[in-house]
Structures are given as C-alpha cells and as structure tokens.
Image (cartoon, rainbow, N blue to C red; front, top):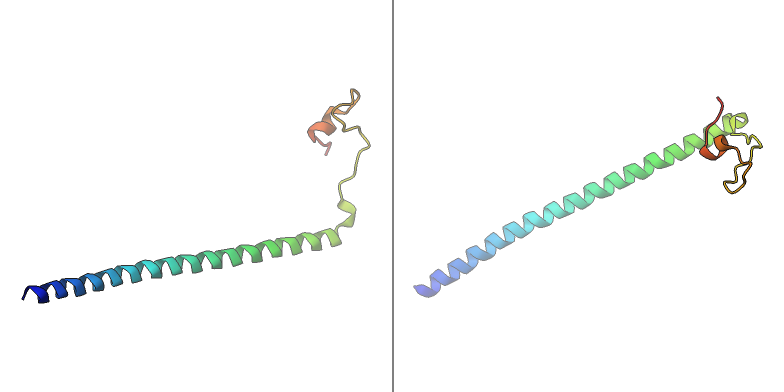
Length: 90
C-alpha cells in the first residue's frame, strides 16, 4: 500500500507541476506577442511621421531655416551670443 501512495503523490505532483509550468509558459508567450505588436505599431507610427515630414518639406520649401550670417564659433571673440545660444528674432 505504501508504494501506491508514493506513486499517487508522484502523479499528482507531476500534474501540478505541469499545470503551473503551462500557465507560466502561456503568460510568457502572451507577453512576447504583446511586445511584438507594440513594437510593430511603434514602427508604423514612426514611418507615418517620416512620411508626413517629407511631404511637409515638399510643400513648404521656402520655409527652410536661413542662416543669418552671424558668427557662431564659440572660440571667436567676435561671435554673436544670440547665435551661439540659438535665440532667433521672430
């Protein structure tokens, strides 16, 4: 009788381990799939933004930033401070 109890304990232990391992494995697969879906969505949004910027640049060619001709070399003693700091007169 002792042997059959040991076998039953072993069977139930294996069943419990299998159930817990299956649940863990399923959760890890679901998490990986969710991460892949979010990554694809993010890449799609980035490509849409790049396309929109390219189209905007095509339709607004005259609104490109113009250089003012001011000196922007920080080592030059006659450099324009506003140009160095990126301040524009708009």
